[in-house]
Length: 156
Image (cartoon, rainbow, N blue to C red; front, side, top):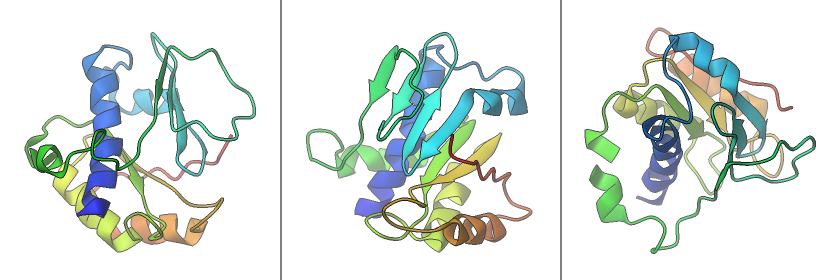
């Protein structure tokens, strides 16, 4: 259940940004240009505002309009509410942890993306620093070959 919660939080982050009009979904694949993986589980999303997700060891920061911090404490992520992440629709991009330590394995992440069914892409994260390797991201991409567009980003 906790692993389900962790991938759901990442998906909700993008849904929040899109619903607030901070990240434009128009242009499909072009929106990927606005998503920057900063290593581990850190992302910067640029648009009308700059959004940081779990910023950590940021090398070249831009002024933030929104900072989102994720973790599984009960008052930040309720399992009952997460079960509602099964009715999410119109997801453009899913940021999915793949290291298997503290989060989903690459294989579990493949199943999560199949549930989320993002229109534009699935981006693996949570590897390359403390836990996990690029091989986890590559296994994730291989598991979704022909099912979803996976973009493995280089950390900035």
